[in-house]
Amino acid sequence: MGQSITARAHTNIALIKYWGKQNPELIIPYNSSLSMTLDHFYTDTTVRFSTDLTADQISFNGAIADTKTSTQMSQFLDLIRKQAHLPLFAAVETINHVPNAAGLASSASGYAALAAAGSRAAGLELNDRDLSRLARRGSGSATRSIYGGFVEWQRGTNDLDSYAVPVQETVDWDIQMIAIVLNDRQKAIASRAGMANTVATSPYYPAWVETAQAAIPAMKAAIVKKDINLVGQLAEQSAMQMHATTLSAVPPFTYFEPETLQAIKVVQTLRQQGVSCYYTMDAGPNVKVICTSQETPQILAALAPYFSPEQLLVAKPGPGVSYR
Ligand SMILES: Nc1ncnc2c1ncn2[C@@H]1O[C@H](COP(=O)(O)OP(=O)(O)OP(=O)(O)O)[C@@H](O)[C@H]1O
Ligand SMILES: C[C@@](O)(CCOP(=O)(O)OP(=O)(O)O)CC(=O)O
Image 1 (cartoon, rainbow, N blue to C red):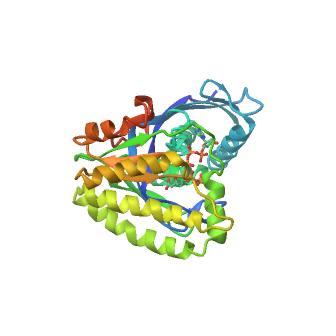
Image 2: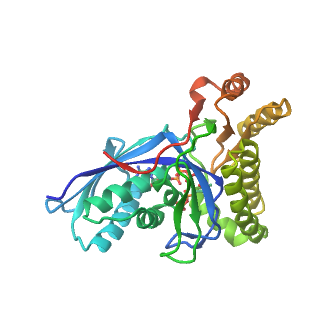
Image 3: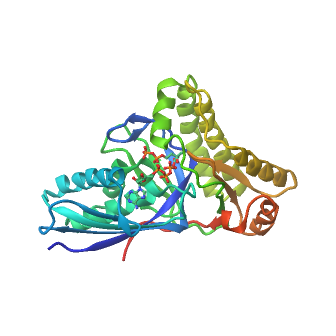
């Protein structure tokens, strides 16, 4: 009977987005990305390898995982089994402490937690870099969730040199995000399919890679300066440039919904009034507002006529992977 290991990983939101893979099998991106790990939203995953099992046993939020999810997780466990030379099945229990369909990447915290708990349960003692490389194989955004604070995923060119590094692990200045949960409809195009389609068909894609790469040093400088306005401006630009590549794909598609524009308008109006707030968006309609805690009450008040309190979730910078 193997040891039972529980790991916690927090989700993250990219300020400079990852969008497109140069190697889909190994999940090597075309561009580097930079994110903020969030405090309130995380996944707890427990893994135990056992001679008693005849198949992986995967429980997801207290129920048996659906076939698609459990197949993906078993394939990920295969990577760990191979690395550890351990031909045993595993019992996995994972719980996402991320509100349903909040547009806060659960694949990021999910695969970072599975990489951490799974590798340890298999007897591997991976350093953070190798843990980041392993998490990357589950989902690109998981590469960054190994670390807390601000994190850069250096794109690299192969399995060995594509991993995340901490940019600022302890964030001692005032920055946070308000996630606006617009609707809980299943998104029509998953990020994986959306980015593949964009790489294959958007004539703007080469420009995306070039501008995203150039934005990384600019964002790092803004973080060092603790400049909320510069961080916000660069994040907003990156998000809208990413979404421009979906509009220019063939056939075109978008993650925007009417409520998305409503939320963006509120942010723009507040900014005209002198409030420091900026928006970002991932592969779904929900908007995340980058702001200071000081101005958050004013921003929540401006959003209140359009969205209920349950739709507005506030998060601060959070920690890296830990073991329970
Ligand atoms: N706790 C978990 N453990 C392992 N895998 C998970 C976990 N939570 C979610 N996932 C995987 O992540 C997938 C959901 O990821 P998906 O990319 O669709 O959305 P997201 O990660 O929430 O948002 P984004 O598109 O921005 O990454 C699920 O299908 C599941 O396979
Ligand atoms: C828009 C994004 O959130 C895309 C995240 O994509 P995923 O990490 O979910 O994609 P896969 O690597 O295919 O699993 C931007 C980002 O998080 O950087």
